[in-house]
Image (cartoon, rainbow, N blue to C red):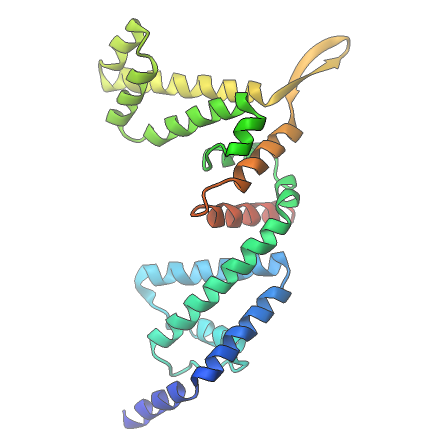
Amino acid sequence: MANKNKKKQEAKKAIAPGAIAMGQKNVENILNAQSLEELVNSSRYIDSVNESYEQGKGYYNPSLRKNLGSLFYGDPTIFSESGEDVVLDHLENYSEKLNKALISKISENLEDLIGKLDSKNLINYLYHVQPSKSASEKYKDIASVHKELIELNAVGKDIDSMRNYLANYYKEDSVLSYWINGSDESTKKIYEKTVQLKQLELNIALTKIIEKDEKQERVLDEDKLRDYVTECIKGADEKIKPYLYKDLAYNALSKSK
């Protein structure tokens, strides 16, 4: 036991304040030199580490300790006897720097990443981000129905919230108001129909009319969709933007393989 405690003391002494500062600089240099795909893979690895921690497995992962030791100090064994608090401090520092480097790299490649996604994936993003100011000004018709779909999605899991929203939405329609305030089943049916209607309105707003075989045909305007999604993601709330960016990169790089 005494020998084990001595090793732990030595492990802690080995990381002096000056070495920690240099180690953090090493990590920054490594991350800044990595490609977007390498950063995404690193981020996925950290996600799995955090998921393991949430499952009660702690940060005793030998692989994590070796990776952090190599990244910070070029020594995969330096954390072999360190306490969990030491590992956690370094992991948090690494995660912070990784997220900063990843968001910066995604920002540089945002339009290219969006270009890798198909229309179905792009439309799915509209359920996770509000219409931005620039998107609303540029595409008023899309932003209007998009905002309503976000609101409907937000109340879809609670019958009382659903009923209150629909009652206000259809307050001028006495017949629908009667059914909305009836049974839960009737409220859910009206909610589902309203969502379907708004999805149809969104699809129409995202289309353009083309001439085909001397007839006019309405088709999805993919350029408009990509531009609108780009505007929304760029203008997203700063608190959720990192999650949106990471999710976008994860999906886009998965689709490109």
